[in-house]
Amino acid sequence: MKQVCQVCNNYCELEEGQAGRCRARRNINGKIVSENYGKITSMALDPIEKKPLRRFCPGSQILSVGSYGCNLNCPFCQNYEISFSNGRDVHIVDVMPQELLKQALALRNKGNIGVAFTYNEPLIGYEYVRDASCLVHEAGMKNVLVTNGAATIETLWQVLPYIDAMNIDLKGFTREYYEMLGGSLGAVKEFIRTAAENCHVELTTLIVPGENDSPREMRELSEWIASVDPEIALHVTRFFPKWKMKDRNATDIGQVYELAEIAQRNLAYVYTGNC
Image 1 (cartoon, rainbow, N blue to C red):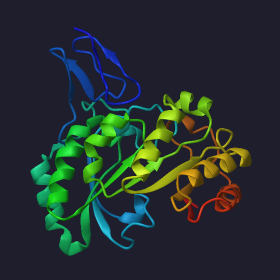
Image 2 (image 1 turned 90 degrees about the vertical axis):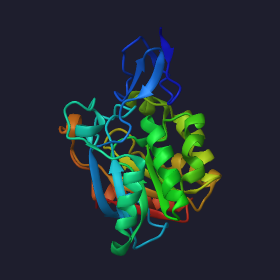
Image 3 (image 1 turned 60 degrees about the horizontal axis):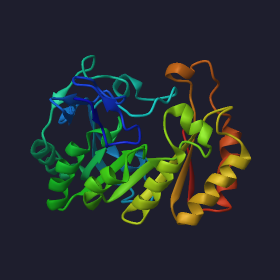
């Protein structure tokens, strides 16, 4: 029986046995299930600034974990090996929520403050994020979510009570650009608004030459962020040729600084990255 996945804004209609665009959810016996639950492809103790978060627990370390799959189709993806995987072509270690908590607690003596769900898109497997972050929260440690914001608000609320901070990609500020990436600007804006009302939020915009690099777009983007909260930090980051965009040049450093200066007219905290 065909079922509609309600986790993200793609609303994939899946026949029995079919996987969604994210490659991590499948219709099995008439029920949409997460196939990447506890399937960890990446794990590292990272500086919190690498998420990137600059105004949340600066100087701390956080245990960062990721699985496989993503619900967008960004041609410049930095982690395409896992984001565009179906889990059969990558190395996987099973780490159930209780074991993840155990590892997080064991790393406290190295400065670890909790767990960051990152690397691929965590919310396509929100069940794991929900279950693990609940345990981490109950243990008095912090939870961080690094996400593209392309999940439904209903999915967001599954994890939001346990999340202390997020970095959300705001990939650009035109409907056409988001459609090219397989997403919805309106949906991401709603996601950001909801998250910002309930936890610490910082945003990242990767500046891709010829795509989202106009001063006008940055002005409109930063004005909108300011309308939500002018103290939301924005990370303006430099693009490097990757995956399907190896034919592009890296973003000019001067342009990154110019766009950051435009954003600073509207926002209290603007940071440049990859420069």
